[in-house]
Length: 452
Image 1: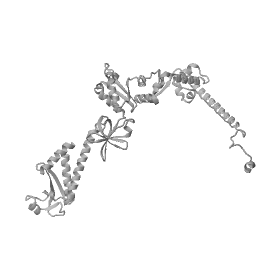
Image 2 (image 1 turned 45 degrees about the horizontal axis):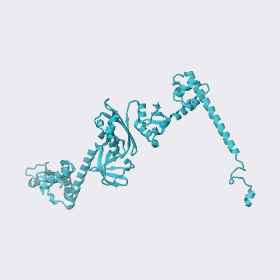
Image 3 (image 1 turned 180 degrees about the vertical axis):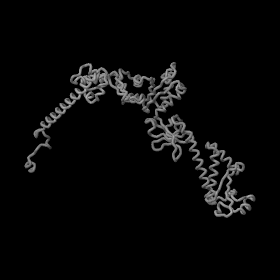
Image 4 (image 1 turned 45 degrees about the vertical axis):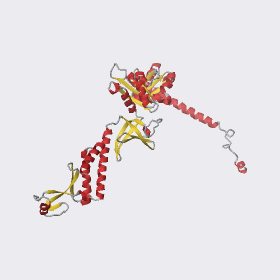
């Protein structure tokens, strides 16, 4: 029986991965707690595990004093020499072994619960520390059960949760199915570590390519970004650090084997692999593939790009329900506005016509303003004078004159529009007469209505 405790500590330590010292400390604390329940909380009790006999020994500490005031923790010199230590001196603190067999059933049960709780806490801490360093990694598990719409995944030593919002809409799982997911976060809660998984995170796409493409794992090919619409389409940007290695070709693999492995894991999600380059305009063009781009207008202040594409490429550039341009925008982090050549030409024509209508402006000044980003006479009038002064090719005097002329022109234009609007409303009101009014609103003589 004595050796059993040694064997239990050894077994629990191996099964749970808990340090023996933690288990022994839990045993000692549990025995102290149980002893105090039996002998009284005011007594000074110490516990020590003796591996030779496989037992936790209990000792009561008492101070040697001349006059006892606190019998629970003090003893007289004569009594100490008689019962504890013949060489005892005043001021000594002597230990007396206690008989643990005197513990009551309640105290023993409390000790057991204390040990179980300490083991559980230690196990939770080990699991938390193990998974805390694995955030951003892929993990394999088995579908354990379903809680509402969340999936509980067994990872071996613990369970993780795959929330509904992190699930791909069209994917369906049954209990016992194997599942691979991305660790989003690991948090410690009152119920132990909570591991949150995702099947929709862009990081999952990157990790899958890292597993399938040795060049990414080795650092020869670098992933610059990824964007997904889970279950539909995804884009991933890659660049090579070795001029002899084609990053797109490395990700595609021989006869597309590498990319197909990723597509298969993502249940048919289409993947566009984009070659990243430092030139942001060209990068956006590549991100919008397979559509071809005619022209790009960059606005660095707004971090946006206006992309002009041939008329027959517009639907391809935008994609189904705007998917292609949306993914390209997320991948490149630029706000992208796609227009067809015909639409752009019409807008250009209207802009030049509006600016050219400002009194006193010549064709060259109108073109300079248009090229500087002004799209209408209203924009010229509402801008600051400094903005016009910044336009190269327009002198200060000319800028001041144009700014003043634009303000007067727009004010007059708006006044006329208001007059025309008011006139149109008067004409509409005058057109409504008793003869044409609806029956329910037509005027009726009071007497006739009363007689009815």
